[in-house]
Length: 553
Image (cartoon, rainbow, N blue to C red; front, side):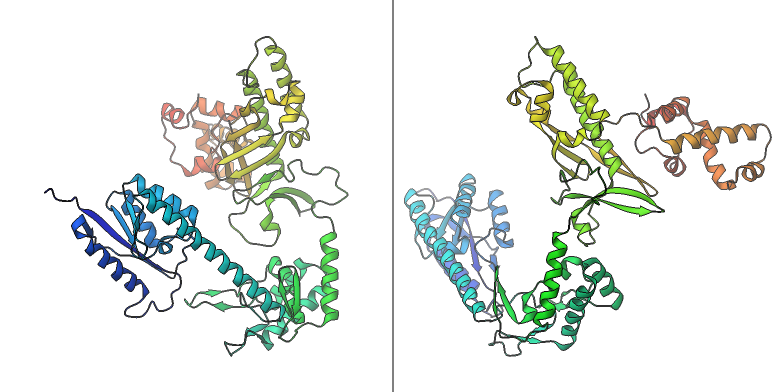
């Protein structure tokens, strides 16, 4: 009789909570022992238990993002496991959708699934049917349990009980763990009263934030069971707004959009609470953004988002009486300090996007890619109208806003969606006739910093003279001629008001390759090319090598 092929079996165990996992023999061990015994009983079928264990303790079955399960799936994908054995099917997953995906993944690798206490095998159609029925009930039980917990929390909050969550500043948990109440923390409570009085006097969250920082007021500091410390930093405006609108401070417990009398003492009296709420409502009704006296709102307002989905909001700053406009990630305006937030010069961003859109329209016209189905008969008129649209966008700054519907920025990438109705009207064609590629722009987006200046580069670069580079090149030639006439470096420095090291590091620009100097004068130099780059980098003396290095045509 032929010998049965060996089936490598892996046992998977899971427990939803970490209660009891520190015991010498816990629930995971019990599940593993039962599964191992079952595999031993199938030795005549060629089943063989592998030594590796796949245990997930304290993890819910509502998600597949579990370390041991992911290791098990990796072994299955590698073809090293032919059978997965579990104590019950809900140990693997409680989601019918997730289970369907798991079965498909196992089938693709020729791996089966067996439950010890519910005797069936997913390799058979009856096993699949039974499994789906059982899993449906498991999912139903989980949803009913969640509803029951939500109802219990709602009923408890109506009685004024504290049902957990992050402790609000000014309160601590009751020392009796059986009493779901808050007790006042006198030191923190005085901080809360101070913040409410500050807003009542100032009426501005930004001013309260500054004054709280000056006085050294801090949010609550919490230490997790793992020893991780949270809080203790300065107040942000979002934190202040949440604190000032939290009804827990007038002795109430909030549940969704309702609040109920709580069983804890109030920190703020009703009169101060109402005064602060009235001022917050009045402040939220004030118009945001640019002053009403400014008649030229930014053309990209409400259209661009960063890689996190945060809106880029117009803002400005005043320096020495001059107004500088920017597009800033909204989370920075809201008071946060996020190094990933964007802060882009408004004029430079609008100019760059205008060049990208104009270049896109002209490129589509030249390649006859305006329509989904190009027509030879009216091609020349269509190209002419597209060129007129591009000229109008380039000539009229406000035209850009009407042509861009949405856009997103990410490091190295720009995406724009153009307004199909506006383009179709300008081209005098139906919207449905436009090419899908015409209304979508995907291109590179790079920021180059030079001192305090931010240079934006997107799409195909166009000639852009660098005034600093051109001026320094001209000065280098003047100084080189003076040296050839016998003027010393010290004399040149005295006459020009420059230091000798400054002149010495810039004179070499006069001896760059003629093609490279011509590119600088025409604005065709590489985007990263700058005076600082020339000083910092080791530029080869050979002209041919310079041209090759900087890819000058």
